[in-house]
Image 1 (tube, rainbow, N blue to C red):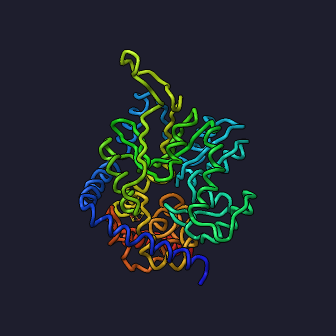
Image 2 (spheres, protein in one colour):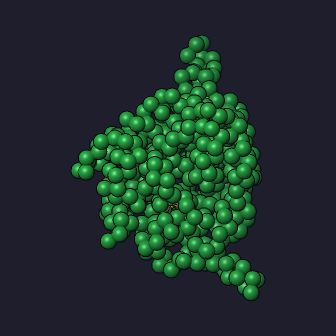
Image 3 (spheres, rainbow, N blue to C red):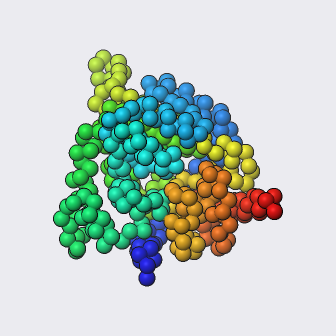
Length: 383
Ligand code: SF4
């Protein structure tokens, strides 16, 4: 068996039964998922309106908000806010990966550290992520032992436990968190009515990245906008459950820079947390796709990663299927959304498992079929 086969089998055995258990133990989650689908569809059908509302709401609570249409603009804005010679800690963010932010900020002369454990491991290994919520699932524990030994220069026994490996990374990153100038995260959802950003996590790295540095920058695709604060909370709940991590250890909510109302109940800013909050809302292909009646469904994805583990093609191809970080069935859709790459869709065998397990009820095979037709048209026009 290859390293990939071993690692993915272990992941499936750990994750799939857990999601089933969560859904039967907390039956309200499936109702919330249906409610969330409706709310997200409303945003996708009125993307311009909700984007505008979200931008204004962030400004009302003392934050800075930007809408960018391309990845180049996004990088430029983030680069200007960060500057150079800074220590940057990053929470796992697919959109940051999509934008190539880590490399870009390093080129500007900054020290940039991924703080999500899986993302940190692939940063050390200089490899692309293989799964949207567990970017290092292609690595076995044995490989992690070797990697930490080689790249961090620390003693790690061959028989180190999972807990011991996590402790090594914890120790290494602690000093980075404390000294960081800027924290960059993605967003699970952005509430249009309040300008709040919600992030769900388990490690505590997002909590530290959003609170310890003086500046917090959240970078999110426009499809992450939901109508209200209430829907943002639902998205965090549903995402965590379908990712098999419910209840999540932390749900982080950021509404502008830190503040206090403790003297005469007058709300002033900053307090102990960041002095500055910036939200960068990114189009990069999403707006165009929102106008296609079939493919727009891809924008409903809440990045739970469930479709991956039920897909025979992903099991066979892993990170080779799609354009990282967009792998698996969702990645075949998103390789098109962001890169207009039709090729990953052509590898879909239409087993249909993904559609059955998707919390957003996305008809993934139908979306991929439409993208296949576009690929067909492209080939036809070339001939
Ligand atoms: S397409 Fe559906 S199942 Fe797959 S990651 Fe997105 S929300 Fe989850």
